[in-house]
Image 1 (tube, rainbow, N blue to C red):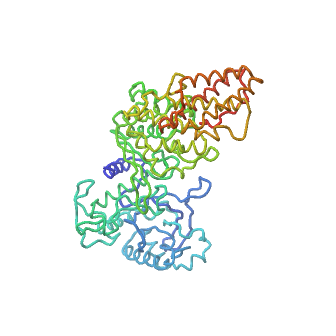
Image 2: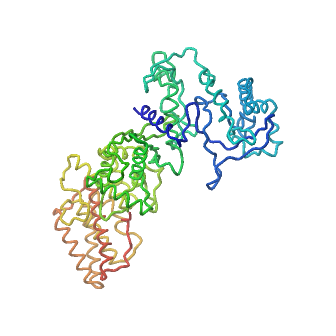
Image 3: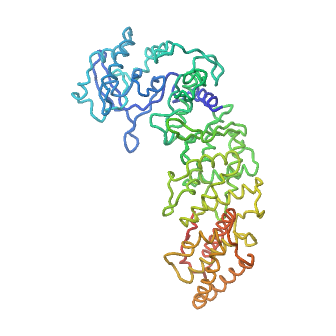
Length: 608
């Protein structure tokens, strides 16, 4: 299913008039320099063709003849391009540059012996007279060029040698005759599992590059490199026959989707997963509209007010049942979307998740996700991307978390839950509570995710000891012990602040974890201290002391006679929600009430 979808997508992309994707027999590679040749094979100049638009020069991505598979540890030259050890016989690290250059030279001299094209003949003459010693003797070369990829072109002619018609014709004959690789004499044609056509299977599939954390040389989804993976005496790719052409198409388009380009909105990283997506529609305009809108939903530009408003409007329109065509004439409810998450696994790739459905259904599931994690006051201006949500499960250091600290499989499981409408990962709630107890960062994002896990479980029929609905905003009528205790803890923290001012360690810093897990062991002591705080506050701000004492009493009146010895995991999540609601309500009140001390800190651990 994955390979079939990628194969179809390749043919749609390659048919576009402005396509940059490589055609069959070619691959997109990083090229840094071009050697300009005269017709008699002399070097006229060496041009630096790297992209200099960024902070430092980067190799330019060019479509060049593919090598027809992985080079691995063998010596195998590329057609009309390669790195310096092959092209020039020099290298900064290779110990076999002499053998690699000899292979490049011998192979090309044999291929170009009968060619009449002026460009190909110039390369033949160049190889006949070039010696590696000339590299360091020439001012046109420098050590910075070592191991970079080079292409060739005639001086005064803008096209590269591999783009000339004669070179393309020679390349086509090589593919027909299997001249690019050693053919297996025992190989037979099989039915391709992707297209159903009878064709020789690809023994080795090309490398997939761009997956975060995978080998820089690339990795594979389909591979059989040990005897234990084989069956019935079949070798490597014959165990799951995919034709050479399909192996090329699916890898090429996947590398295209994984490319690191600031304009590529079809790729995003979530934890250790590299996520790509694409659309299948009746017209390319409809497909591109769906991909663009889906990118905005999955990875909104939160620092762009106009973009944030657009996302809010789309989600609101979907919630109201407004047809997608009215939102955007190019959006079609039935456009098919494909989402693939890949993660590194040694020299291979793991499929973290694979989801496919119509754009309309996926948009509604994203809307349900937004509704499930919605909490007031909102800790964000627009729905945060999944990668940002996963950071909430990582340790917080000074309010910051690193993507590398996110549990490896959490990102894929969370994305799968959002796209499929299934339960959020159950261990997400455990992680969030553990993080809040350990680092004391009861952030809006963490609390919203706790609310989302509990809300979705309740909506999907998970049996719990409490059927009370998870509140979106402050609910003073809620009798859930966890929620009320969270509110009480926030009020006691507020009382401590007004009585003592800013201190090094508040009750949240010292007792939040124990109070949320074993209330009976902490709250009696906190309430005894609260009486001391109230006594001090009555002397200074009697009105404020009266208000706080009244609010504390109202919450306690709704609790059981005895504090619970312990709280279940779900109630610890409600504790965090109650704490957040009460704290944020206090902040909102302080902004509108001139009688309240406005020197109160802005968040105290409830930041977004």
